[in-house]
Amino acid sequence: MTRLIVAAGGGGDAVAAAVVDAALYGGDEPAVILTYAWDRLIVDPVPGPRGAADFRGLRRLTHSVRAVPADARPVAPAGSTLPRLAAELTYTFALLDPHHGVEGMTRQLDELIAEFSPSTVDLLDVGGDILARGDETGLKSPLGDALSLAACARADVPIRLLVAGPGLDGEIPADVLRDRLGSRVHTLTAEQVEPVSAVLEWHPSEATAMLAATARGIRGLCEIRDSGLPVPLTDEGPAVYEADLRKAAERNALARAVRTTTSLAEAERHSREVCGFSEIDYERAKAQRLSDRTSVAFDDAAVLARVAHIAAAARTQGITHTTFRRLTEALGLPGTQRRDLRALLISTRPANYTPPLWHFGGQG
Image (cartoon, rainbow, N blue to C red):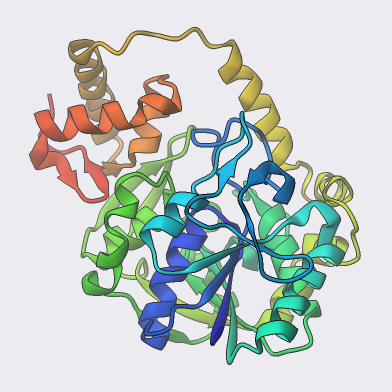
């Protein structure tokens, strides 16, 4: 191992880690990406992050760390994007397991550093909610980032905190983050995001999709998540900043609270106390709602008519783009039909496809 990069929130942060690693270091010898197996319910119907026991076929890296190779499989009913990422990207994806709290995560990080002596260690977050205090009204998913931040702050080696695409996660606006960011270290280009273009055809990450879109020059207002949050696509979108990790860890009240936790349940309790909620509780409630939903047949004409209605309403609010994940949820379709929806829309409205986003202009 020459480099180690920690994907702060898992999910799309792992994809962005591959992009940023290649952009900053050349990518001749790809880094090891340490990441949660924590996907949206559209991929993994089981709330919360997966641990090593939730997989078959993991490969041992150290006593506490397992790699997720292409032939690994999550134990049903769980799902995970990591095996497919390992198949399509030339990176080693190591499993960051938070089930033993920050104590366990710090142990994993220390073991990797001791075993492989990486030349650089970076902590990457797309969007910048890792720089939160914990009381921001837009905060939706603080726990994973706070755990990663606390573990990295305890490490014995210098770790650089990188924030890509400030504001793109729809949680803390870029203007609010501005004073918490350090210097801009890079601006991603269309050429640099091209290696993950095929991944973003199927991966449900919205923040990383918008990171790639802004690097390709797409500008506008993008609607994301089940709640339809509007996120500006601006020149700040493809920017990568270096922030002060120690200051971030001191600012982040949840990161301070979970610093000595020994279980995920303990960390969740702190999240409820500090932030007023746990995103895993939100996932539990949403998973229950989805399980109660009656399956609806996928009718092409009906779907296209409903998309046209959604597009018309969005345009009145100045929305120019959306993600396929957002459309899938807005239509009330199960996650398994996201691929069908995407194929239908691209085949019938190819001019509206601005990879990896969907453009609302000129529909219906």
